[in-house]
Length: 56
Image (cartoon, rainbow, N blue to C red; front, side, top):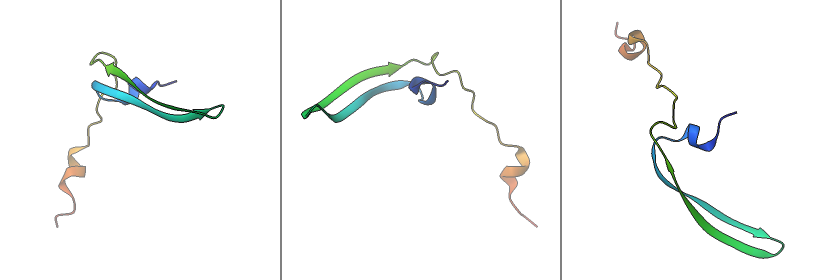
C-alpha cells in the first residue's frame, strides 16, 4: 500500500483540513515534509523512438 508521501516529490507541504465533526467546523493546516529518501520511486524513461514522433 502506498502512503501519501510515496506519491509526492520531496518538499514542504501543508495538509489542509476543512471539515465538520458533530456540527463543529474544523479548519486546520498540518505542515509536513517529504524527505528525498522517503520517495523511492524511480522516474520512468521513455524509449528514444517515442520522442521522435512521426517524421516521414
